[in-house]
Length: 225
Image 1 (cartoon, helix red, strand yellow):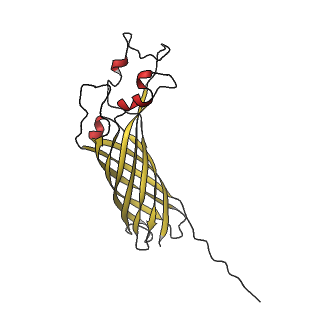
Image 2 (image 1 turned 90 degrees about the vertical axis):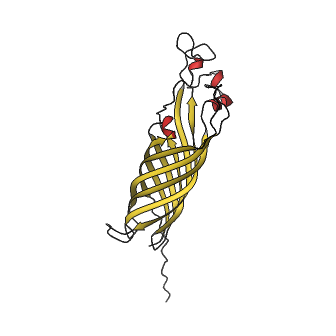
Image 3 (image 1 turned 60 degrees about the vertical axis):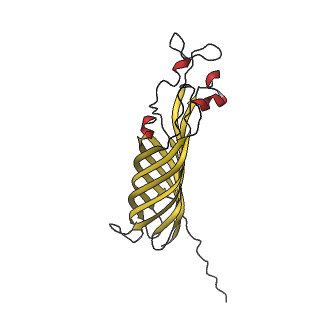
């Protein structure tokens, strides 16, 4: 059975390689849209927003700390600076459902892969306090903006009823970003040149998805006397 595919996804990924030097566990929330053919081929787009609260970089704001061990805002009050990992990816996908271990030909082992774009950076918040050194464009000197080409792989299981009523999938997921730093200076390390080398930003984890049912309108029968 062919069908249009619009799915909502959640994933949990653990950074590896170069990305693990910056961040810990990250959540992924996203969508996957596309088309599943009657022969179980899938073609589509997948995009995710990445977020978490585990920053592994240290000393970002050490040069802003006063002799009492505090960072102060423009009014001289003790300030709280919060930093979070954030990211985004969008990939074109191709995959297939193999109808084994399933109750019908639409259910079975689901694999897909693809290529696209990856962005990640650090989001800096000051809880509405004004700290001139990290306001507006000055945040760019700390956020470690990084972008590049992204590829992914997924292996899991797809469950789909013949009538299209319930449709879920889940499995293990990996993505590899071939990225570069996009800032020319880091304000916490002004004397250290920003690396221009290609990075390998890897995440591995799991992904769960629910496909929103879309039904064709059934033709109405008309009878005339």
